[in-house]
Length: 343
Image 1 (cartoon, rainbow, N blue to C red):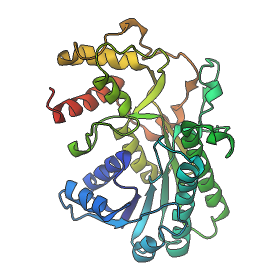
Image 2 (image 1 turned 90 degrees about the vertical axis):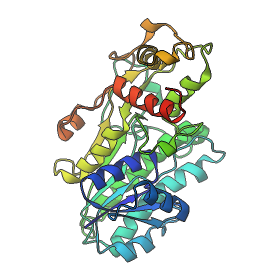
Image 3 (image 1 turned 180 degrees about the vertical axis):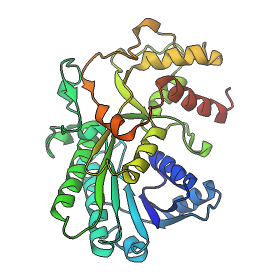
Image 4 (image 1 turned 60 degrees about the vertical axis):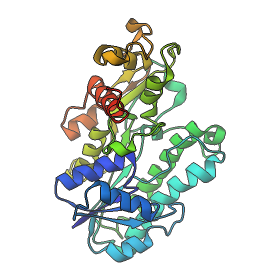
């Protein structure tokens, strides 16, 4: 039995692959090039339980056909993490919406065509972006939960890349739920989605520490590299979750029966840039002259300064405690500084 992980070289996906291998699953991962495939295998020290395939363009609806034609008889679990996540785009529809939707529909169609009776569980990496309503973020009387959907339309979300990314996750996830409902008589698998907020935490491999980090970790990295005189952004409020918890949730999403048909919202609460600075200045003495002090009392950790993100049902289903803000920031920063030899 194998677990297929699409987009296996991604930030979240590498943690998923690591945890799968630690639990002795056989893993087949996909990446966009042979070089990326080879690098991941090398990073995991040629683990015999890991193999890779090239899927170069997920915007093609037949992108996963070859993989499931070849390995469909062995794949029992599909974790679909592959989706564009960047904001440097000029065409939201072409670069975000279409790849996200086609990638999701394409992999489900490939399962239906080549492994309808073999694949037992499918987990889609969605996002809180599929739920978010930007007009409600500062409304203290409003609560986001797993029943809600981002109100943007295909047209309105193309006003900017952030809205485009969030809506791409909505449309792709909705496509998955619709497919599952319409094809229950033709496929054997059960579906769940994982919907995390802003993701922090270390990379699986030190080699992924770059001058500019992946979108979420760049929030921390940009503060580390901006210098001590940069003013603190007073409007930097966001929600956080640790990448290791997201990976753990993906595994439990197919290992548990009570996750079937569920959207799992992962959030550990509010933070702002000042909260990051407070951790840096307290726990990393070497940074005290290199990052701003800001106004230590203006942190929002542990408070609700706007709409609430209710993930109580997800916590009840998963049954484990999420990694707290201090640890996720410390582990992220420690790795960056160690690799850059600044500790």
